[in-house]
Image 1: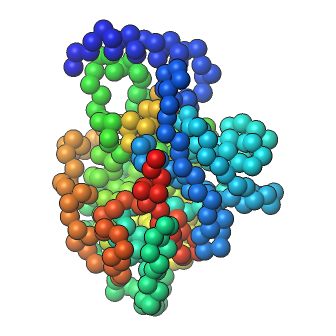
Image 2: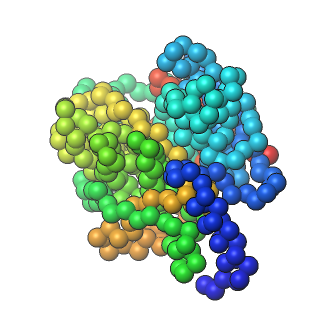
Image 3: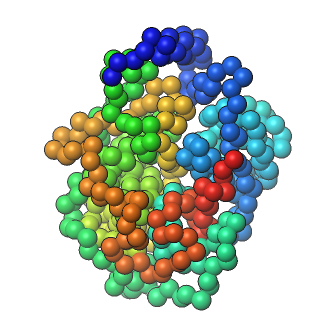
Length: 379
């Protein structure tokens, strides 16, 4: 694609500004002198007795949640600030916090907010996995549904686990190659992701890595490593949910595969050490030798490519050169995300308070969930 001389000058100015900045990977948004940007909305809330903060912006297509009670016992209250990403909010003591939950200035600089189980997903999936889920700024839930008891040796009813395919028929990716996007590349090439494309990202040991939906649609699980951190990223296209957890099990790092089984239409992974079955959304083993064992959660941020390029100077992504003969430009799920109602597989409970495919943020505390809509985070 040919670009105008004006566009070239704009990119040249951005590059000059970037080289003059601190050499950290995260960068502040380049908004232009005096440019106004929407403020990220911030909600101090409670979920099943736990104090949480939820921040989000429809414009940037993200919502995130963290705990508010710090390890030192302090209870933080957050407020909205004029936003220059990645900084999104300020606490009562003047510390400013970024979208990954780290304090970047003020008395708590360098500290991290407590992790809370949360993920984006379709409403039918959150409501089906957690019947009676609360809805922020919404109608009260029906509390009359009683989930059936778990089967012996399981933490869920075995009869509600359905087969979608077989073990490893959907191939997980093990330790994929990495590509680094640089702004200068944009001068010469049309990059492979549209600004609206969704990616999962995480931060470990000061490093950031992104996982495009376009790849995860075909593989669902990526076993990866950053430094000494061994983890698996999973994405379930049927429920639209993404999580990451530590791969440690029994004192060693295992890898995870796609079992082909589903519980409430949601991905069930299996570990290659014990072949136990793991529910992605519940983030625990639901059947097998280590049933009931919960994983250490690694927070993920899901947003679009346009926002990621604002958050990170040179985003690092897993490579589209996976060794598999897939056309990553075309989703195997076609228009499922926008057009199909619900899922082709059963869920234990259907909740009609919202459209089934509306993307919400689910925050889960001790088996109880609360959902947040983008409409609550829109200016």
